[in-house]
Length: 274
Image 1 (cartoon, rainbow, N blue to C red):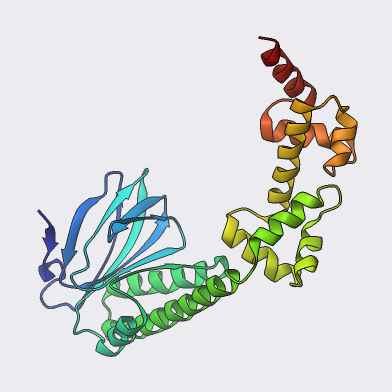
Image 2 (cartoon, helix red, strand yellow; image 1 turned 180 degrees about the vertical axis):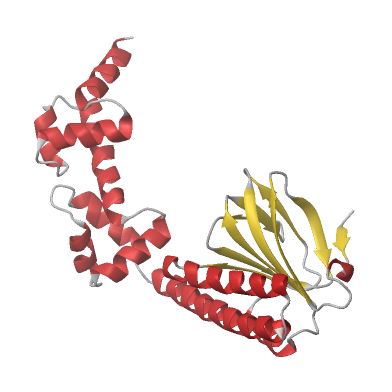
């Protein structure tokens, strides 16, 4: 049965509640009568909604409208900063939010905005706990700045996703594989006609790893194949995949695979004999 957290969670005379919670176990699927924002301060967890599981860590914001159904599971100890707001509090902000986001939304903060958002949240928390004169007005001001910032970041994230999708990543892979001996991150960007900083960020967003690491992995995958299937010397193989210094080739191969190129070749040779 769906658990439902009533508006009573927010004290009857208050329009807003703010707290932090930590958990190893999470909360089962539930809904509530108020708007909720959760920010992950530390740790990792999953928020599930609409049958989709989303991973959260520091710098991620989860937003839930009234009646939104969701659940949270933590991998380990996680600290979450929660703000819950009654629908009739700051109707202009809620209206703006409702038109911008769906019933549930995720805003991934860029690294340069994390401290700014955290400072706003901690300022709201400080006002809420102290409850000095005009504290609700102060909270309302901070919330307006916070939501404006989240909407701005969401626009930027959406724009970045659209521009990233215009890059032909099949062409990127083809170029890297055909030019292993000479390829560099900047040469890939130049080949496709993008400036390097923009292309590098878009690539990492799409593949989840930076371009230099990806190129090295492609070189090492080819080196593995050559070690297993040919009698070429270690030095020749290293040069063919763009590692011109044998010592560096040994070092990076062992870092990724836990063995040297010679040891890898020998283990494959022993397997073939069996």
